[in-house]
Length: 118
Image (tube, rainbow, N blue to C red; front, side):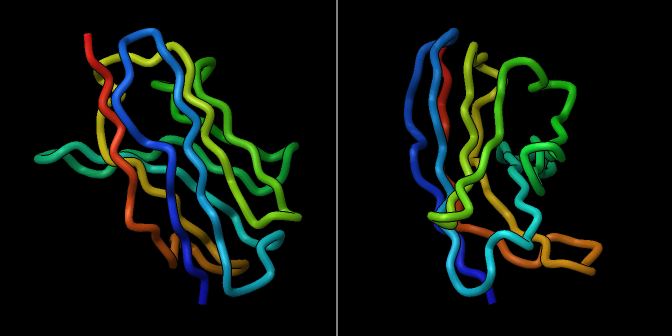
């Protein structure tokens, strides 16, 4: 089992920055691939990016160059640094964990809301 708790969401003006955190507990964190997703009401959940290690990070094209994912295995936390935010980045952001050998993200946090005003 993995428990995930996101934090750091809020209201920010376009062009601003936010950093989201996702605290994990329950199993060896370092072996887990961590992903970030976002969802707007009425739309499907959108992949934002994922990290397995500092050398293995992947971003959606829509956020590449603006968002940075990192992880602190000593503190079981993954971060999403969001810069140059746009109104279209508005949504509920979720972190998720994919355990070794799993093809899907098995565990999800409750989400944290990000609102970018124009």
